[in-house]
Length: 105
Image (cartoon, rainbow, N blue to C red; front, side, top):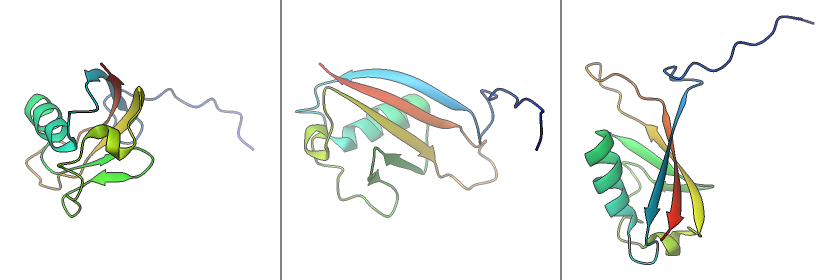
């Protein structure tokens, strides 16, 4: 037994920190590829990454879903997506997970 209180999460910690973002999109038209390229890569400068909901939607070895509209991938009026930085290179600072709340507009 230990009576020491746990420390709160540190926002910059790769293990316990999480960044959050709210995004509005037309999930009937917007594709996963557009989300990855126009939001995750262009705006946040991610290199290698994984995209997950309750299932794996994309990573470097699984690109089957890039052309599919978000609705066909199970997105609803509000869906939470987790972006995980998979970049292993030494010259890039590891990023915390990015949780995106995608809302249908």
